[in-house]
Length: 378
Image 1 (cartoon, rainbow, N blue to C red):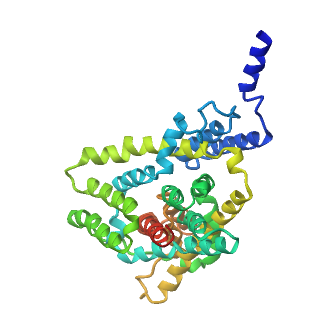
Image 2: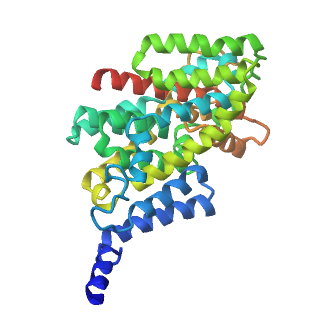
Image 3: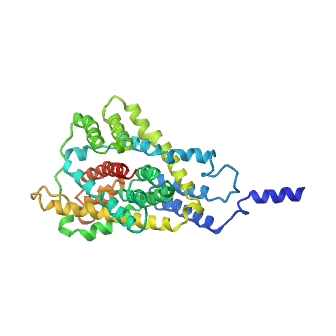
């Protein structure tokens, strides 16, 4: 009887159910954690995702009801926020409550840069179709180019739930790699003269403008893409909580404890969903390649749009094309990249405040693009 009990115990251990693919995924999780701690690349995202990858790839005996894909398990219940898509709107609520749209309000034409950077989404969508992905899958993959993890999760949960783990991990990975991917493209596409362009200081924005912006912004975007309401509504609502001046406690909760809790849950469960047997497929490789392509095209689109737009602007009103990269919605990392690259050529030319305009416009743009894709593919 003791021998039988020992054999049964062994069957339930991870050692008995081990395969090399689980070890590979655990190593990937460790790399994520290393990059977060050692390099400080998006630690708030990569630490939960990396540890989630490790949790999700502990070999399990079927039927223990602890795996993320086992109905009714604790992890499965937590994963419902990803599957049903209600974590991303809560993230957008927090983003809205911590975002200052002053740079965009003071210079509305910067909104066009955020729109131009969405070129990566539709470029990757086209290539994904050519590789044999269905239109819905291609749309979900393309949104990686928006450099917005919550939007990628929201859209893929509706269009391609089977690919959601790979899409989410890819989106967050490239968000963390913003300081690595974008500078070479920015330098390649611009001349020294363009990098030295000085922009006019942003005009002061009144409190009334800040209060009206989330209301007007929501009405305009929601009427254009009603399918984007879950993201756009929460983004602008969060910003109204911040700017109204009478809901400070709610704004602090949204941008503090609430977004922190949801970030932990979304990162951990997305990481757990990368179970080796579900994740290690040829499609996942294609998704990572297409994700990198879409991100580079988005950066290309933003920078090149500024260069072309400058042809129609008078001297003194021209835009430094180094802020074109900030059109992707990796807030505020891509804006910081604009600042750092600009300072390499002129230590007195601070671009951060200007770059925040297209950066927050990119957040709106990625949500609008998601709404468009959901509208005709959902």
